[in-house]
Amino acid sequence: MINIAIDGPSGAGKSTIAKIVAKTMGITYLDTGAMYRAVALHVVNCGKNPSVEEEVKELLNDINISYIKEKDENLICLNGKNVSEDIRRHEMSKYASEVSKIPAVRLFLVDMQRKIAQSTDVVLDGRDITSYVLPNAKYKFYLTAKDTERAKRRYEELKAKGQEVSYEQILADVRDRDFNDMNRDFAPLKKTDDSFEIDSTEMSLQQVVDTILAKVAEIDKNSQQIKDVNMSVHKQIKKNRNKVKHRWFYRGIANFVRWAMGAIWVTKIYFKDNFPKNSKAIVICNHYSAVDPCVIISKLLGKNGKVLMKEEIENNAFVAKVAKELGTIPVKRGEADVNAVKSILGALNKNQPVLIFPEGTRNRQSQKEFLPFKPGVATFAIKAKAPIVPMLYYKKTGAFKRNKIMIGAPFWLDEFYDKKIGDVKEEATQVIFDKMQELRKEIDILVEVCKGSKKRYLKYKKNQSKELCANVGKGR
Image 1 (tube, one colour):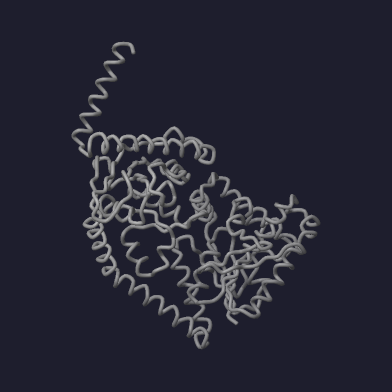
Image 2 (spheres, rainbow, N blue to C red):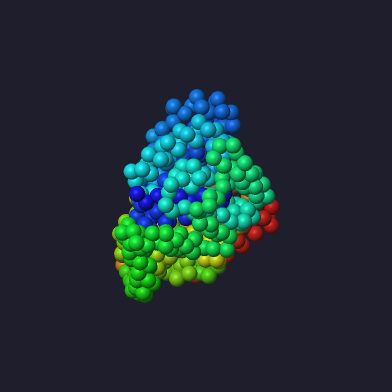
C-alpha cells in the first residue's frame, strides 16, 4: 500500500496539498482533520462541551463518519448528512482542537484511519499521522509555514466565504492552537526524525506538490508503484503543456462564437455609454433565454468581462473550454460555491465587469414581471464596493429578431458598506429589485410610447421634466 503521511500546524495548507497530491497520483485522500471537526460538530450540536471528556465520550457510539464521492471531491458525512461546509466554520477549528485532546476520541478515529490505510492507497494529513497514526508509513512529510502567513491565508479564506472575522483574532487563534497541539499529553504535534520538512511560507501550492512528488520518487525510485506515479505525473505535465499549446484553438472558437452571436441575435442597445466595459462593475439583467449571456458577451462584455453560468456547462469538455475563453465563471446553484465567490471578487478587484442574472434562473414564462431576486448581487456589490449597472431585455430574445436592451445608470449600495452583510442583504436586494422595476417602466415607455426611438424618448423625458417643473412652480 502507498501511505503518504503529512503532518504540520494549523493553516500550513496540509489539506489542500494532500488533496492535490492524492488527485495527481490517483489515490484516496483521507481528511483526518475533517473527522475531528465532524466529532466536534456533533458534540456542539448535542449541546455538550467539547473540552469535557466525559460529555464527549458518551456521544462517540452515536457517531458515524463516512465519505461520499462527488466529482473529484470527497464529501464528509456525519450520520448520513453532508457536513462538509458546516465543519469549516471558524469556531470548529477551536472545538476540533479541544476534542482531539481527549484520548477516547483519538483512539476512536485512529482505529478507523488505520483500517482504511491497511486496505487502500491513501494520503493522510493531520497533527500526529507520522508519529502515531501511521508511524511505519514509508513517505512522511512535515509541512509548516510562519504563523503570520498561516493566519493571513485563513483570514482571506474566511473573508471569501463571507464570514466577518479579524486578522488579529485569527493570528491569536493560530498561535493558541499551535501551543495546544504541541503540548497536549496524548500524541502531540511534532516533527519525527524520518519526516521531510517543507516550509511553504514562500512557496506556491504547485511548488509544494512538486516537492512532495519528487521526494516520494526519490525515496523509492525503483518501486513499480512509484514508476506508475511518475508516469501519471509526467502525463499530467504533458497534458498541461498541451492545454497551453492548444489554447489558441479554443480562443479562436470563442471569437467566432462572439461574432456569430452578434450576427444571429440582432440586438438594439440603448444607452450603451452606461456600460462599463473595462472597469469594476456588477452588471445585472433579466433572463429569458439560454442565449442571453452569449448576446451580452458578444455585444457588450468583450474579452475583459466575466459572466456567471451554471456549473452544468462543464459537463461537456469542449463547451467548457470554449466557455472559459468567453469569460464564464461556473457556479453551483443552490449551495455556497467558494470557488465561484473567489473568482467573482477576483475579477472585480481586477476592474473587470461581471454579469450576474439576479433572478438566478430563466423566466420560462417570458413575463415582464421578475422572478424573486437572489441575494448574491447585493453581497458582491457590498463586499467589492462595486457599482451595479442594470440592464433589461424588453422581451424574450430570439434569432434574427430585433431584440432590444436598455442599459440604466450605474448605482451604488454605499448606504450598506459599513454594515454586516447578513443584516442588510435582504434590504439591499430590495433596492436592486426596485431599480430594475424602474428600468422596466422606462424601457416600456421607450418601446411602446416612443416606438423604439431614442430621440423621441429623450424628448418625451424632457417634456415630462418641464411639465413637472411647471407643476411644482404652480404649487400643485
